[in-house]
Length: 542
Ligand code: TEU
Ligand code: CA
Image (cartoon, rainbow, N blue to C red; front, top):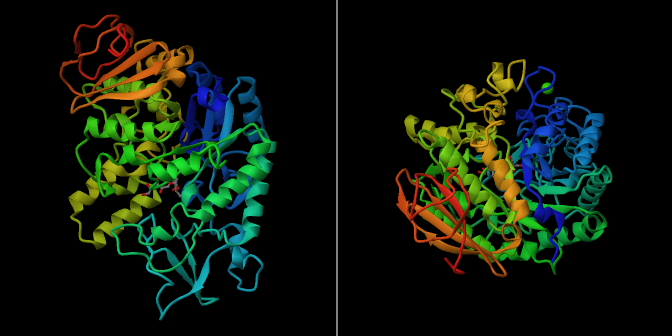
């Protein structure tokens, strides 16, 4: 059976502020992206996911939208956006946008109006009186803050599950959904091919009752994957998405396999795929701020659970919220190149659509900031202050931010070894990693044995092998050092074996070497440190 185009293509996520600055103001922009389209084309990218480019006061770098019908002037103009869509299409690259509809910016005209209790916009947001001088309920937010803000003028509070400048929309009001549909049609009519839907499984709050006592996100049982959210998604699909050749990928926080199956079930017609989080939580205790030692087998088992749970996954190891994968699951010291290639192999040989985050393809590492003043992210600052209030010692607070801050992934793209890594001729909005002279695109682009060269090759291989594109997945080993799995289609069986350790490791699999990250064309019974191999099994199962 022929797969839909969004299953065959590779997606590349661009965080526009950090990708390429074209006018020297230190902020990446749309024109910068246009100038780099050839680079993405040569890499084999078929879809670009643009993190938000709408008008925004940037409290959360665009995830706080103040006008859905306009472009953030820091990033360019609507004419630039039209040009980007057109030039990308000429290269057969499709563009999906970020859809942030759980909340808006507090600068959005709807919210400004809604501050007036008599305004027809009052009901676009969730306003409630307090209880005995306290907030309406005991919920807590995603960003380590209270989630209600008191408004003197009307004597009521509004709800925000993220930063206080990101008030939640009220989906009990049918007008809100109508507005969303108009926004979607506006962009789809412009030639956009779909959306990455921000925190899409928490839209509908079916009660504002107090939440059960729990360590984080008190109140979540009242808004996580509620029936009202499923109804909203079905309505968007029926009235808008089904009218276009497009796809949706939902960012679904705290999603369970059963919730995931409901959201992606083709019969229910809601979303096409989702980003789950379980594999990203295998190196933490309870919350991402408390890291534990990385264990490859745990990662593999979490991936396996989702490979089995859903027919088709949105696969990722990085995005703008996560630390760099080579620093986290690989080895960003001696085996930097080897381990980045191993992670590339993992990402591109799972069943599902692979999402590459900018810089991942050259092995960019975590941000080397040396003071909190160099960190911009609102979440990092909130968490640091909360941790201080909770009397967590200074050295540990520092470690939390260093390991987990979202700014780890947001430093400017490292294009070459010139000033500011070729990202900007001006002062970048966020520091460039000091390793840019060693780690950059120019240094790797002409070398087939570079990380970038390896991504190119893997992407080509995936495109040419139906077994990689659509074969079934089967986990074979999830050990402390070696992870292996098979992809099978009809009579072809590929075995992917990954050595997540700094020593040679024995493997029991044999076959013709299709691709080895070390460049070897034959292997015996041992993998080299951090080596990844793709074998074609001779005897069926290997
Ligand atoms: O993120 C949702 C989310 O809950 C987490 O991934 C978040 O980054 C944090 O790690 C929770 O501890 C999405 C966007 O990807 C993120 O950039 C936005 O800040 C957030 O929604 C609000 O729009
Ligand atoms: Ca700029």
